[in-house]
Each structure stands twice: as C-alpha cells, then as structure tokens.
Image (tube, rainbow, N blue to C red; front, side, top):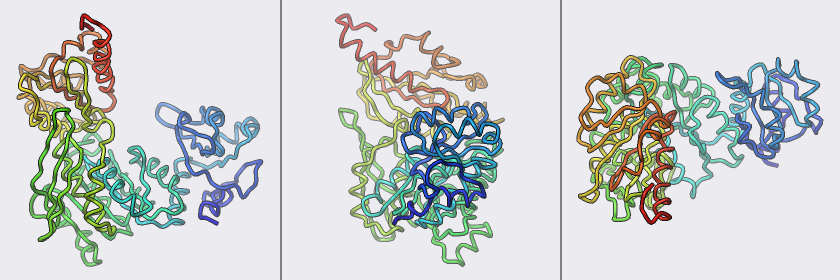
Length: 488
C-alpha cells in the first residue's frame, strides 16, 4: 500500500475540517493531480474552483467534469447554494471556506506524508532555468519532482506538491513574489531544507517599493524552520551583505547551516573561463569552469547567454549537496535545453536568426539579453535588431529603468519598441524606429518581411505576447518557399 492509497478523500476532508460529498466509496484515493484551469483537466484529475480578479472557477465546474475531473474542491457557500444541481454531476465534492487555503492545507499534509528533501529557489532572475537545470541533473540518480511550469505562487507551489509522486526523494520548488510576506507564507506552510537565492535586482518594484524591498522579500526564504543549506549570488554586494549581517544569518551558522556563495569572486564555488560559442547553424554552446578549492569541474551545455553560467553554478552546488557526482552533473549538462522563451535560437525567414526571450522581462534580464546579442558571432552583413516589449510592475522607477535599457541598446543597429511604458522615456537613441502600443498594431503597420539578414532579439513582459511576432517571421520562411517571387 502506497502513501497515495492512504491519502483518501475522507482523510483529506479531515485535514480541511470539511465534510466530503460523494456517491463513491469514502475510501476513494486523492487525485494524482489538481488543476485550477478547467482547460487543463484530464480524466481523474481534481479541480480547484478559485475566485480570481477576472474569472471565478466555480463557473467552470461543469467544464471540468466534462473533461474528466473526479473531484471538485469548491467554496462551502457556493456548494450550499447549488448543492442539488452539483450532486447530480456524479463526482466527489470537498467544500471548504476558501479553496486556496484548502489546497494549501492538503499540500502541507501531503508534503509531511512524503517528507522529501525540499529545495526552494527564488531570485529576481534565473529561477526557472536553475530549477530546470537542477531537475535534469538529479533525475537519473534520485526520484525528483518539480513543477512543469513556473508555478511559483502559494497556489502554484501547492499544485506542484499535490502532484508529487509518493516515492519522491527530492522536491524542487520555485518561489516568486511581488509583495512582502509572500515567500514567508510559502516556507511557513512548505518548510524547505535547501534554499537558493539567484539574484536581487530591480523587479516587481510596484509591490516591493525598492531594491531593498526586493532584498527583504527574497531573504524571507531563510525563515524556513527546516533550513539546512543556503546558496546565494556572492557577486551581489547587497545580497552578500544581507546574508552576513542579518541575525538570522548568524543563527543559521550556529545551527550548522551550510552557506555557499556562487560567483566570479570571493565565493565557495567560483565561476571562470566562461565561453559562448554559436556555430554556423546558429546552435549555441556555453562552456563553464567551476572551481571548488583546488578542484575544477568543466561542463558545457547547449545554452545561449553567459548569464546562465551562474545558473549552472547554483545547480552544481545543490546537486553536489544532494550527493550527485561531478561526472554525472557534467554529462547531464550536455543534454540541457532551455525552456521556450528563455534564449532559444530559431531560424526565421529572409536569412534571419530569431532569439526567443519572450517569456518575461525585468531590467536585469533585458540587459543580459542585449549584451548577448551584441556579443553574438554573426556574419558581417547581418544586422543586430531588438524588438522590446515594455517591462511591467516597476512603479515610479519605470521611466528611468526603461531609459537605462535604451542606453544599453544604443550599440544595436535597430530597435523597435512595443508598449506604453516606452512613452515615459523622453530621450530615445536614433536607432529606435518607433513605438507601438501592441503587437497587433506593430504587425499591421510593419511588413515583417522587411527584416533581412538580421539577428533579432524578442524580449518583453509576458503580457505583450511577442512570440506572435516570432511566429509571423517563421511564417515568412514558409511563404518564400512557395512564392517564386520571394515576396511576402
């Protein structure tokens, strides 16, 4: 009998202090996956009806049941009003005062049941790449579980935990925040044993106020009562000073918590000899040397962007802490692939090379992306072009930070700006070809086939959906193949 067999709906209702309503056996097992989006439900899943700012999940319960949901967690109030209609659907119901709180309670109980080592990763940039790299490095030696997507909120981490198999050895969570106390709440409910802070930079300033506010929010991760290990970016002076001076830091040292700095200098794991190559087919490779005392570990990964050297360092540090050997880590690095939207290089039409950085954007990540484009080896007759979407949640600093980005892009050949955030910048370099409010406006007023022999960077906040432009440029290639005139 597995832990999943023991973790029944009846037991779940006990954790929630709620009564279960089902026509099936009271010993029915908990679903192996829970969803909050009815479009993602597959047969046997659980569905959690959440009231959001724009949508109310209770309105999609029937859609979830049609898709195969076996269990619905919903508000007690809604269930009371619609009980007769709902019980005709033939699935199990777990009413609770607040479905989000209910999901957190269930996840907390399931985590305690399985009791894996828990790695928590936070930071202004690099969280997802570090998580993906670490998962790849560990999965062949340990039963490892992490989120498929960037589920880094309280409900997101709850869904990740609820989908964790009962034989999991290592759980890897991603912890994001845009307001104080969010990470504190996550580690209070889901105590992590190993923490990684990748970076502290200007991001989510609208909710966190300042860089000091960002630092304080990220440092909430060390409040986990189970913490045994802390790895951090030792090149960030603000972060390093915070780790050294905070009372919690001294307490951690006394309790034997391992603190591992990762960086280019003054670190336990030192990064050196970083080389980026891109071959004639525009296939990238990143080579990194990691020094630990007198020992050196050299690894190469098919990545684009030197900033990933630090992500590799964090993954190496944590995998070593888990007991992974250096050879296995280096072999795993060779097979790593970046998630879509995080520096993936694609071929476009008109001999263009497309750099897909469309997932999201912060001042630090956009700066890295521009630097990578400037350093990229391309044919001499190619142009370096950036299509930049605005950066969100920067508060009163938005105008200044957008201007900083344009100053850093001044060495490019052409820059196209999308989003009202760029209107706050008064001084724009001559290489700026215009500002458009949306991707749709840009695409309708600009012939994408005018881009020829160019390396084109697409980078902006997720809400701008710059990947739609990439699709158009890839489509240009298909049209050319069918049109003898070579026009689009």
